[in-house]
Image 1 (cartoon, rainbow, N blue to C red):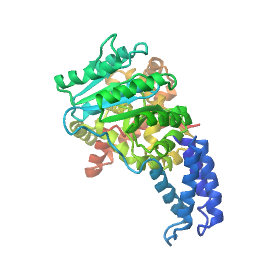
Image 2: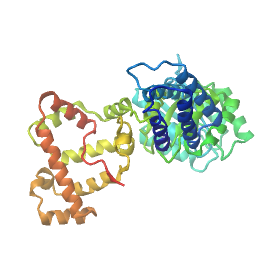
Image 3: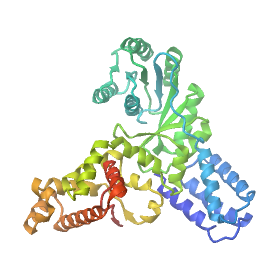
Image 4: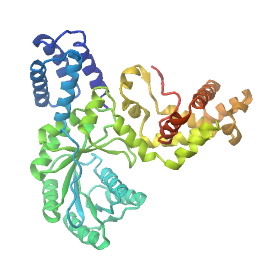
Length: 450
């Protein structure tokens, strides 16, 4: 996400790094590249024009301090303007002061609306709430079955009625939700492949009859400027409260995320970053601006680690590390935690400066799959004592995991180097290492040069 935009913005900003001061000429030249980068990222042209004009006005109207370079100053100005463009601050779901909070999901078919209704239910459940899902899409084949399957996996009830009008289904769901004591009711409405009058009338009627506390528009970020056009059409009819952008983990230029808030003046509240149910993140404009400018997003990384963090596991790891008893079995458990946190490429992008430092390095999640395959091909004794893995054992492990002897050699070598490093730690460093490992942040070998 935003990799191409980040690289181009970095190049534009570097043009000012050797300048002694900000002038109309050098600012205009740098912003010409910024403008091109934003347009290439599929940002709305009106949004780009306003952004560039605002940055230029602030850059030329601001005194550069002696301790700050022109390049640093323009980064700060662009950072502030990116945050403003994307909404300024995080806006959470509005909840009802009394009774259940009713949330209505709307959007086109294929945007991920049903999946993200379930993701939202999981999020509320993790916050100690009692959600219920409502299957009000009776037109798409298997839509009800899909929501029931997702609800069953989450242990969240799903209200549905066959051969019933969607408006009546939504109304009946509110009655049933109150009866069951559910405090969050999420209504999955029907979508179409394109906007049509019948669909719009139906969601308007559901809104009128259920009076939702929150209407969320779900849109696929990979459709580019069409996302903005669709958002405006839905907003004109429903006056929705916020946006969920899906597929931000895919091959997307990111223009929708940078345009949609400015065009409809409603906040992006969540972003979908993967297929798993936990792959739903609150949208923070400041954190996203940091990622775009290559400054990382350590706060989000720590939050993800904390979701996997186990205090007891941390203490157990600390004792193992202290006694030099950390094994490949323990390492395999850490890989499982890493996979729960997201893709390696995404995690690396959250570390300040890592995108730039690893330019040309392929950070591939398949590396974790290969490591897992090698470890699971080992016997229990081999995982506990890798020093006994001789040539014939290495051949067997390579054959069993579909890798090469060279891959096995590299894994064992890196693991032994990691154990030596651990052995040299003590006191606070030991506790810090165990905590980071407990969050799934310690592993050898990020990738390879492309």
